Image (cartoon, rainbow, N blue to C red; front, side, top):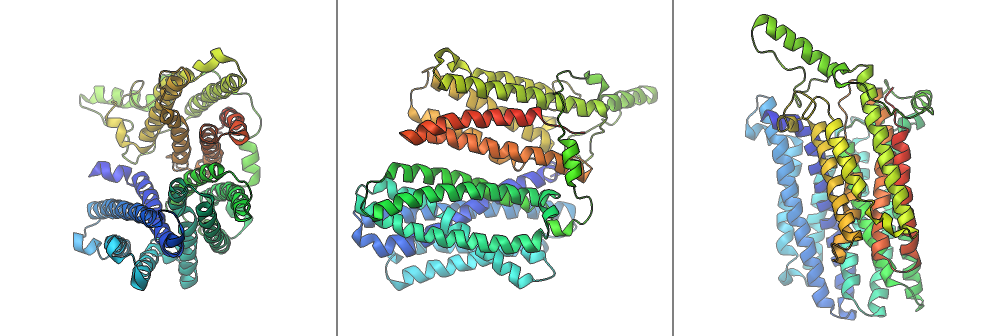
Amino acid sequence: MELLVDIFGYLSIILHGITIVAQSMTLGGILFLVFLMRPFAHVLPQGTNLERRIARLTIYSAIGLILAEVAGVGLQVAVVESTVNLTFLDVMQAPFAIAGTIKIVCALLLIPCLGARMSRGLLGAILPLAIGAVELTAATFTTHAYARLDNNVLLLFVEGLHQFGAAIWIGAIPCFVLALSKLQDADGWRVVGARFSRMSMIGVASIIVSGTIMSVFYIGDVQGFYGTAYGVMVGAKIAMFVALLLLGLGNLLVTERLRKNQDASVIRLRRFAEVEIGIGFTIFFAAASLTSVPPAVDLTTDRVTLHEIAVRNAPAWPRLTSPDHDQLAVSQAQAQLDHEAEQRHQAAEQAITPGSGVLPPRNAEDIAWSEYNHHWAGIFVLLIGLLALLNRAGVRWLRHWPLLFLLMAGFLLVRSDPEVWPMGQEGFWAAWRDVEVAQHRFFVALIILFGLFEWAVRTGRLRNPKAALVFPLLVSVGGAMLLTHSHQISNVKDQLLIELTHTPLALAGVASGWARWLELRLPGRGGRIAGWVWPLCFMLVGVILLWYREA
């Protein structure tokens, strides 16, 4: 149970992100079925079969929502029970538990409503919409709006509108991609494309209106955007939202050409929609991470100023030499405890127990150690991007560049956490209870996996076309997970100044992963352009890492 409490913060963000994805896909599937698929099923080839497929996808999404909510509510209940003297029944009366239970019941009720027996008639449309509306209402009571003392009703409505916009647009895109993949004629593409474009416009308008109102009430002023963690995460969401708008604009142009009976690339329509799914789901995880920080308007002190940002990011030569391990504060504290233990002839408490909630001591050498790690990681990534670019330009023998990922992974495994194995006192398994250590090792595992897969693909050892997709998917997942990355730093300003570096790293990682996806999946000029974009994004990541400072 102690371990569960230790990792609660990070695990709750991940589970909440999965819940938002499943919820949006469930609501989006209902809206797609009711307002697009069923009204036009009779004019689409294989319309009945396609309707069943989309209903099945929506049912799977509802099942995913049930599992995610059970896990999320169960986690919160377990943590509350272990930290507060309350019974299970007492905890289940809390607002989060009531809202979660309602969402689970609604998802259970949706499953038979989406079955073939109830798919026809007015009841088959009204019942899923009504259940979805109840589910959406319950979801709004788990947002920041419910906890506000002022303008509570307005903000609850705005939060609901925001989630509705995300569902009818991003949550319905998987259904749209499924429909495009099964339809084989221009008439079907024209009908589905035109209708979904209108649905997407409603979603975009809902998100823009609600997002603007929430920014006014939750952020308040310009400094709230750059001076608080909440504002920085909202800025990351806005950047990805703009990318989605550009992709959506590209698809709108295709659907307009289809509507006018002109030649258009349906393949581009599908590939852009696939990338919209990936970036949209990343936005959902960024939204989940917002639940772990208070709105900017509530942080009137300890805000970062533009001057502090400029000072922290002033040009400086990268740190290419590292202090010795025994100069670090953790090592010195451990040595002191060992000395006291020897004098008293008893076992001493360890200097730092990962996951205990005790922040490790830090000195100038610790900062230098961390900067050294980031700067050498930047050199690795910059070199990887450069070699990939040269390989793209035709230097064939450079196809082995993915092996550099393995060297970087080994470097990070040894250096990332000096207080744990292999350099520190804490053992390999004991250190997993520390969230930051677990995150670092997760990223190391990702680096190893996509390095090996990409090398095997480029050297012909893996010939399955799907194997090539592992690299862009894992790079994109790594970028998304970086948006949930947290540092245990007691000073709020230091935490935010580091986040101001990690956020553009995450955005560049997401961009590079999905650009590589388009290179592999999109034929013609678009794919070739994407093939030049993603190595440049890697090089940008390298430059940002070389620019990294902690003091």
